[in-house]
Structures are given as C-alpha cells and as structure tokens.
Image (tube, helix red, strand yellow):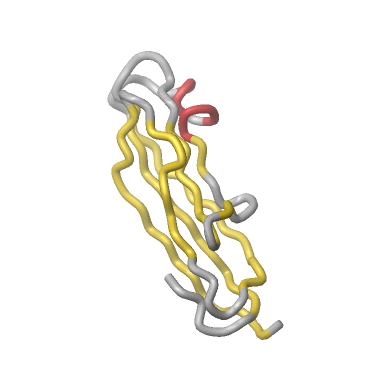
Length: 101
C-alpha cells in the first residue's frame, strides 16, 4: 500500500497462524514501512503464542496503533521468520487516515 497523504494513520494488523509441530517454530509476521518494521504492530507467534498452543491449534491476534506516515511511504506485511511447522493462515490489514500532520 502506498500512503497518499502525509498524516496520522490508524493501522490494524490481524494475523492467523497454526502450529503444526510440538516445538514452537519461528513465526514472526510484521508490518513494515519502506523496509523498516513499524513499532508494536508485529505479531511473534513463535515466541509469544506457539509455546502455549497444542499441535494443530491456530490462533488469531490483532494489534492496532496510530502512526505518522509520509506521502509515498510503502506499507507492506511480511513474514520476517517462518520456521518449519508454522503455518501463516490469514491476514487482515486495515489502514485508515486519521488526521493531517
């Protein structure tokens, strides 16, 4: 997504992942702006959720935050790590203009 106007944006990141092995595999889904992670929007299933889940169990996590973005910034969602036994099932990403700078 390319940011059309400089200002504050409400960003909501919801990801769903499944644990397929007994050990907690790496699985970190993050939101990036121009190649750098946006603070507090990453979801680390491998560290924060998978250790407490059963094999075959899936979990959906949502994080939201308001960020100041510049016109032309490129926003993407990526898996920064995806170990064997981790399955990224789904992603919902919303970005709403909140106010001008």
